[in-house]
Structure formats: structure tokens, C-alpha cells
Length: 492
Image 1 (cartoon, rainbow, N blue to C red):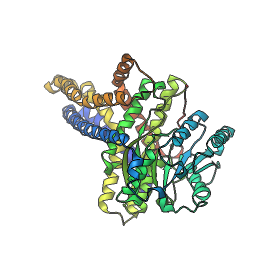
Image 2: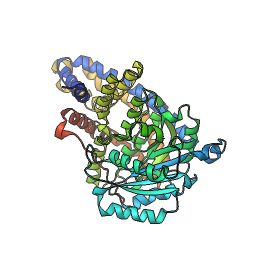
Image 3: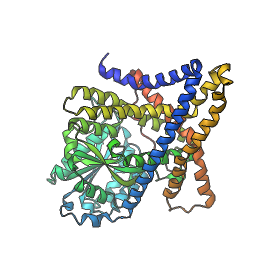
Image 4: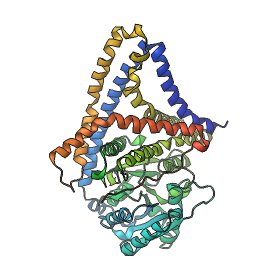
């Protein structure tokens, strides 16, 4: 078995080994596990406090950036008008109304639209519907931007996996030939933004992106990451979907305050020349958004980072045609994101081959990826489920001990302090709700109370899909996941 294959097995091995060991020791050494659970709950409290501080810090910076007129800030930089933007919008079978809203927001940007070179990447497999959507978009927005191109990614090309990465690569290459090369624009002056087709920009997104690019210490060795807000259809989303959407937003906002850990996610931007240098997005993977970061990190011998923008883009919350379909879609979406564990084997194998990357960076990123996916799959189960195992299977002798008697009380009190993180999330989620639709006081109350569903979101829609994804990766073969497109369903 190759080293690469072993590294695909390791994440699931660690997860199942952790859960099995906790279960076995709860039976064999219940007192030890009880002490471990208390220590783990304290660790979780400290981690929550740490994350809460970063969340509040990130929110303050985000609000500050949203108040600024970034076009005015750009006027202080003489060369800003030389920067061009290639915007890649891969789509599948999304409705015309969803795609049109994205283009409307681009057309209303506080930035010279003649600097926008937009490519709408269609899939041949999507059939006539996608072609009809593209035709309508081109008719309406033909003169709104510097360039507007629609491409069709052929189905069944060799060495490809159908999905976002292969579509993006095809679309970007066609756009370079049809837009960038045709206008003789130097690659060093082009920023590439790849957006999900439901991504709606806020007015100053390209202003702050350009400003950050021109003032960054390493502009050509950096990706640029906004904060994803899942707000486009938030009032149509059921409570579980809203909580999961806001939880994702807050996680990425916290990560922005820790840029040394920041990896690209979904919609993001990067310079064109490095994208060409690394060979574009790999065409045979699922998690292309994070993989492109690691491609650059490896190609440039560790000299790559993600610069946080502390500025949002708005995307769809997960809404299906029915409540139950929404639950299915939520699970599948989380499982697809958790499939990012495929990067662990890729990264560790390349680290082994590449002797030019500093050893400390190899250890740092290797640990970050392993620990992150392991925590995703295990932490919530340890807190909400396995903490009771010593009492259930630890035997009569342990159950009559003072430690067993006090265990529920101690853990409950620790978790009560941990609720400071939930309170912060409740307040910020109410603040971030769009004001386009006036809400009654009881609707705000309902939204706040919905956060009691957090244990469900962390376990059923967090740990479970993460465990399944890592287990499928270990089993490989027919169990491997293909790219799953999250359906964009709008009731209105």
C-alpha cells in the first residue's frame, strides 16, 4: 500500500479509534474517562472563549470595512485603475432568477464595470436549460461589463471528475483567450475571482479587494478571502438551515481573525499569474476551493497565504423544495465540505516529496488539517453524547461513587459557562438579519430561540457527515464521493 493511500486511511482511523477507545475505557476505566470528560469540557470552554474573542474582533473589523468608501481609498493609490478582474461563475442547472440576481449585484458594484471580465461557465450535461439561461443573461448584460463570455464545459473529458473544479478550469482558460489575451492585458494586473453562481457581492467588494491586493506585503503570493454570508434567501430557510448557515458564517469570520490558519473557501480571489503557474484548479477532485490554496502553497515552496478581507459576499442558505428535502440537502452539503479531508493525503504526500518547504510549515499545516477534521468529527459527540457513557456502562461500583454522582452537575456547570459562545452567536445573527423584510418582535425571539438546536446541528449535521466522509475516503473505490451540486431552490 502506498504512502498516499495510508494517509487517506489515517483520518478515519483516528476518528474511529478515538470513539472506540472512549467507549472501551468508559467500561474498563470509567473514573479515568470521567476525569477526561471534565478536563475536555474545560478545554472546550476555553476554546469557546478564545473563538468568541476572535469572532467579536472579526465582526468589528467587518463592520468598519463595510462603512468605508473603498473607491475613495483607492484614489490614494495611483496605479489602481491598472487592475483588471476576471470573474468566473461556474453554474449547473440553477434558475435564471438566481443567476440574474448575481449579475444585477455585479452591475451595481461601486467599481468601474469596464474592468470586469465575466465568464459564465456552463456544463454541457446541464442541457438546454443552462444554454437558455446564458442566452438571457448575455442579452440583458451584454453592454454592462468590459467582457461577458459564456463557455460550455464538455462532458466526459479524460482525467476529469465532473464538478466545479473542472468547469472552473475550462471556463478560466477560455476567458483568458477570449477576454484577457484578446485585449493584451498583462497577467500580473489581473485578479481572478471564482464565485458560486448564487454569490452576490456587496457594493464595495471589488474596491476592498483591489485595495488589499495593492497594499498587501506579498500581492502575487496571496489569495484573498471574503466572509460568506448565507443570507440571500434566509427568510425562506427553516430554523436548522438558518442556524447552520450562521454557524458557517461565524466560523469563517473567526478564521479571518486568525489569518495564519486561513484557507480559501468557496468564493474567493487570487492573482491570475500564480493560477496559471500551478496549472489552474485540479480537474479530478471535489474540494477545489481549499485544494487551490494547497497547490499554491506547495508550488511556491511554502510562500503562500490567505489574506482576510473582513468583507462579506452573500450566498444562498440551504433551502429545498420541502422541509425534509432541506434536511437531506443540508447533510449532503456538509458531507461534501467534510470531503475536504482528501487534502490531508495530498498535502502530506507532497510534503514528503518537496524538500524545499520549511519543516515547521510542513508540521504546522499537517497538524492543522488533521486536527481540524478530527475535531469536526469527534468533539461534539464527546460533549453531547460520550460524556454519559461512564454512567451508562461503567458498572455499579462506579455509579455509586462520588465522582459519578457529581459528574452530570460538574459538566453541566462547565457547559453553562460555555454558552457565552451561543449568546454571542444569537446577538450577531439577529444583527446580521437583512432589514429588507420588517420582522415582528416575536419573529426575532423565534430566531433567537432556534439556537437551542445547536447540539443537533453540531452532531447530526456536523459530526455525522464528517465521519461518513472520512470513512468513505478510507474505504475508497466505489465509496468515494463525486461532486454534489447544492440545489438552489427559491420559493419566490
